[in-house]
Length: 66
Length: 142
Image 1 (tube, chains in turn brown, cyan):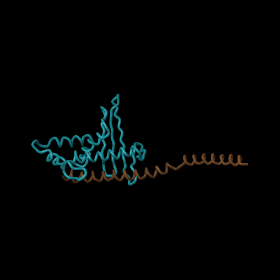
Image 2 (tube, rainbow over the protein chains, first blue to last red):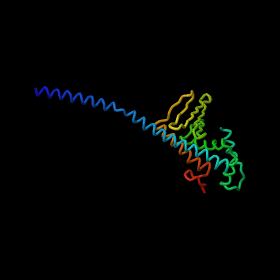
Image 3 (cartoon, each protein chain N blue to C red):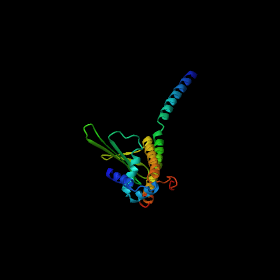
Image 4 (cartoon, one colour):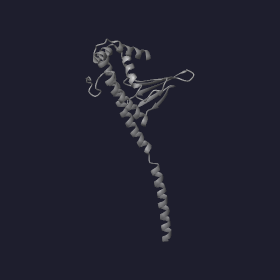
């Protein structure tokens, strides 16, 4: 009986390991990366837009109206 | 753009001798239209991505706060002209690359980082070399 229980436990543990590994592989990293990507895109877009605004102002203040 | 650029350059070159370079630049810039100023900026923008192959002409410039343009022209062995124009649209939360078609592609990863870096360098250099201003303070460079 003890041996049967040990074997059953081993089977359960093996199954758990398999499921655990599977779940680990299925961890939704892309979703996390998407969030990071969205933040990066938004941040970079904001910086580039600010540069464009500065340049537009520079053309008027330092160029056309110099 | 080429004609505009030539006019901008010749305008600067045609101003009288004996005038200090600062005044020369000031007078020149005063007479330039916004389009001509952008053409001057583009001479710097076209250099930001490395050497331009022989026979190629490259322009890269900021048109307005939400638009950047890349344009490249070249002749092939049969002397046939090829052009490629890419528009970058800066939206609130992303930058979109618009290719002929049009095809739309959101900038991500290295491409996004490289574009942002190019915009920064473009700003730094045009402020110093076109407008004679410190890019951080806006003060005139002595």
